[in-house]
Length: 499
Ligand code: RVP
Image (tube, rainbow, N blue to C red):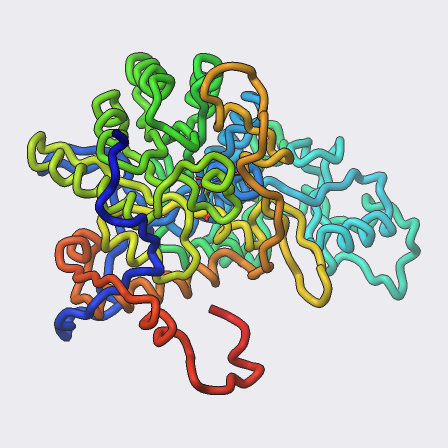
């Protein structure tokens, strides 16, 4: 006879936190969201931690190099999508590792033979008012000059005037030498009242530009997630099919953390992949997804450094409808956390848990943390921002961004759903969709983090670990869910939008 669970599968929306005493020292300014992402022994520190408990999903529509830089700048981690050729994924990882905070590879470039017309075209296309002039027009060619809007007057200068006649030539430029630190670059910027400082190597080739405004932005990001070389920390998703080719390329590119990306991780394929990575490389690796204690213990005993929880709860996921497998995200998390805590008590090894998928409201993140997750993974949340790789479109009167599942025909990520047999997607487990455009990552994250910290203070917790220990969580009845929203009033227009 089949095994029947005693409790129904529950989602985050069915729970609420009950406040504890808030002491006077317990205010958002004192809350730390630092959290482990890889396993560690009792009394020791994990080799990688996040400064905020956020990771962006292993999805084509979410996590490329731009998202990875933007999220690491705010303290979280992106797992670059694996449903692309090995070399392309490795190139994205390399871009993140090569991105030096505050140092940007020049994105507007000209040769001396270009004309004022070209300068104006370029400015219109890119929005940048500073362009580098190099011998071959590439971002790393020999630097011959710089053009800014102060170098020409559109009312007086003819449009065919060559760039060489009005650029600031290299001989008059203030520049920094390769290897200079960001704070030394900033000193030069201030000393010479510059907006932009080119960094050149010993052959006079351009390496980077440092902008005054980027330095200011860098200063504003105390949570930046950096490795020992001050490069951003980045993750990457792998599958259980081509890992012998993919993992060496990702490791060579400098990846910091791997994760096996699969809709169902309780498989011998994952064990083999974990064993291969553990015996050949030092890079930490997570596995998943699972929804119960057996799946969790199997992956931990196979070597997983963290475990991802969740099947079928993703916003674009139709696995439950298509195959009838999965579990409510809260129930899955609660059971896995219980298994993790027992494992920790027995072995002294702490395995971080990632709650993946199904976060709809910001408070779901706080609930997931309170229930014992160490960090969350989100797709829809990040897909809405400027930094996600997909197109922004206008549908009706609203701006939207495209967002599609890895199990959709559009992504064709058969490796994620493979359970043996033919190398193809027989049926879709995900949809192609739009999400409402929400602006820039940082401003949205700030708001979400503000809510999490505020709730933690309600619960009398200054750290995630304290929240997990102290949280009191109640199930809510269907009727009391209605009570939780605005009710029995007529909403004004201005209150109808937003979270
Ligand atoms: P959400 O944050 O609710 O958008 O969920 C994102 C998660 O959904 C991913 O991290 C992944 O686990 C899952 N996913 C991605 N693609 C698909 C699919 O096509 N079914 N599901």
